[in-house]
Length: 103
Image (cartoon, rainbow, N blue to C red; front, side, top):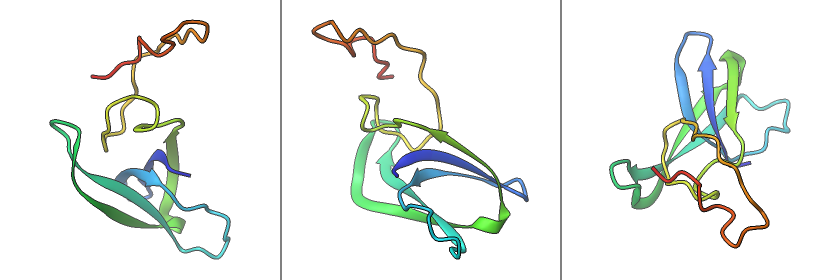
């Protein structure tokens, strides 16, 4: 729920968004991805509106997910499907996420 995914279709199209709906119903025909209305230059919301993308499930050939995806984990909000550099987290420190990338 809410994880960022990149979905590749059988025709080569690729869709990126946050998969917010559970996929428990075997009779579902589409998957819904949500993208935030962000200004990617400054990572600020333009509005509180979201853009939904509906994808036919039978045409999906590959799903990739970023678990613990932003904006919940301290990285700047983005609709892009990118990986941050590896970060060592020191839970015994007073600032365990101080090396967390924010670029």
